[in-house]
Amino acid sequence: MNNNANRGKVVAYLPIILAVVLAVGYCLGALQNFSNKIPDALNRSRKLDQVLYEIQDRYVDSVSKEELANRAIAELLKGLDPHSVYIPTEHVEDAEEQLRGQFGGVGIKFLVLDDTLTVTEVIQNGPSYRAGLAQGDKILQADSVELVGSDVTTDLVLKTLKGIMGTEVNLTVKSQGELKGREVVVRRGGIAIPSVIAGFMMDTETAFIKIARFGANTVREFETVAQALRNKGMKKLILDLRENGGGYLQTAEKIVDQFLERGELMVYTEGNSQPRLDRVATSYGFLEDVELAVLINSNSASASEIVAGAVQDNDRGVVLGRRSFGKGLVQEPIELADGSVIRLTVSRYYTPSGRCIQKAYGDGINYGSEVIDRLENGGHQMPDSSHFVDSMRFETKSGRVVYGGGGITPDIFIPVDTAGYSVYYNRLFYASMYRKFCFSYYQNNSVILNQYSDPHSFAHSFKVTDDLLSDFAEYAAARGVRKDSQALKVSRQPIASLIKATLASYKWGENGYYEVRTIEDKVVQRALLELNNSEAEGRRGL
Image 1 (cartoon, rainbow, N blue to C red):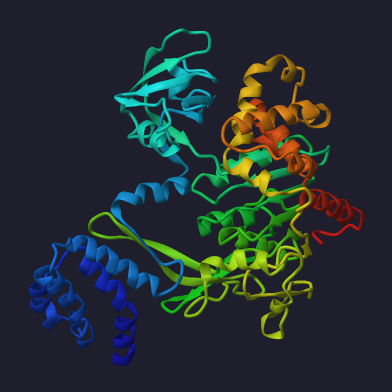
Image 2: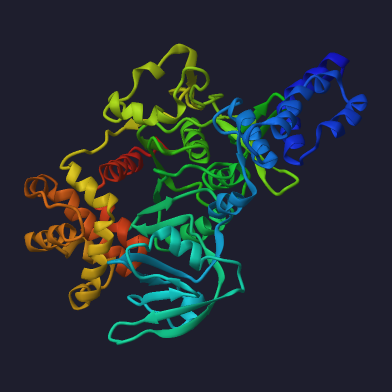
């Protein structure tokens, strides 16, 4: 490589070099001593470190050099692209938790119900289960922290109950029927965060699987669920990636590999310092003969778009829903000396047809509000024709036309179903009234709910009556969401549907919730229709 190329590469990495220098706290003098050993380009960057030095030395108020360095690093990365970010040391654990798929905790799900921490589910064989806690128990105190009163928030509960695995927390617990609390010691353990949150048979041949994120444990979870469904007769699959914001690239590849034949291109990546790298399917997959429908929406991003793009470009299945988010950049985590992390964009990924689906960013573009702009501009009701231009025109393996730029455009566009929705419905949702009311109902009406042996029978037989709706509205009104009788009539169907699904979730978990919701989900129902048509016409995918 010639000298010009070397110098160009140094300039390209200059922002990151500076970030590391600032993060480890090199002083101006140290940088001077090092200056004779580094290229002129880096010498010229001394002014940034000088500014940091002068601020700390001369500024009218006292300032933290570490805080200034953190802000400088964040601003450096912000100027590159929307997905290169700085994560301070104290936030690294939270940032990695969801993708790692585990955290240290006591093993419960909960609600702050009428100012009291209430256990809604005890995770089987988890720390709280072994300590004897049960659904419906109220936790009054954890160590010295009171968990009763108007100041109790979800954040406070998480901060109190989560912790290092193996450490103990002393709880004061009151069970139903008890007059006073009892002391319980719980030793925190590793609590799994499932990424495959639902998987069940919709009929004798068609299964539904929902993946919430692409984390470290997703492949194992997916294979376990998919194999169980194959044993039940699965020949068709609806793979729901709606609201899935992505995760690990390698995880997405391994999920795609389940469906593609050996040698088929899944995705490729390429960047300024990263040569093109093709990822092709192996003989690893055991779902190559399963008819496939993939569901996406505007919050399906990154790894979700890799899966949808590979399925679409290889004509492996039908993609339904609405245009995906449009994140085609790949980040690599780089740990700094103090334990903080930068996630640096190192390459772009391309679908098998050659599409880069990264949406536009830069000066004058409000990247963060683009998805909201789609809603306001009608993009959730009809396809955006501005994306169907020749410069973004590509072809799938069979010659079907697809388009790049700004996300994956589904094969079948299905508008947002807004029938019956209202401001009142949303207020109830954001105040968690559905969850709170349904848990109270579930606790007090177990005889009624125990008549149903499984989610399928419940979904088709349980009725949300007018009396139940009225009770719900009164319950919410007593807790701050003013009753709107007219809106309750307008929104009867979506409110009743969510009540029914939430009740099912308390008895059968996420599978129960989605078994109820999919019955009235127009995207899922259209996917069922397409899979039936696909089978009738003998097609591999579309």
